[in-house]
Image (cartoon, rainbow, N blue to C red):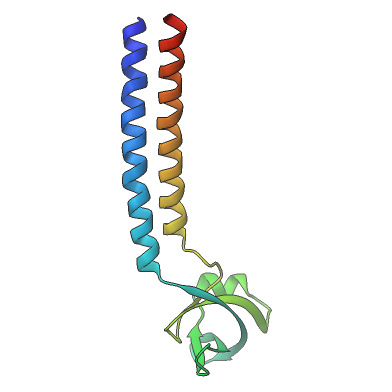
Length: 131
């Protein structure tokens, strides 16, 4: 029975740490693709086809983005808000600095790595407890 527990802990350690590294690299790639987002103060106005957010970008240009249905619902009743605009693009805004994809892959990487480290620690504890 001890050999089964050792094997299970060993498998969880290797798979957890390995998958944690793979998903950590994937999280970095997704973060790089997501780009850089800067906080901006926007004025929200009604326009043809929906509400739009307008702001002054870092380079002095005026940015304008049509609000998604989700963002429009979250900002319902407001005529101004603090949001995040993508650097280098004057037509994209969102409510949070990082996307859900980035947070999900980073959380998955951390969870799998933690599982692997805990399994490795459990394996070492059993090794020294028997020794």
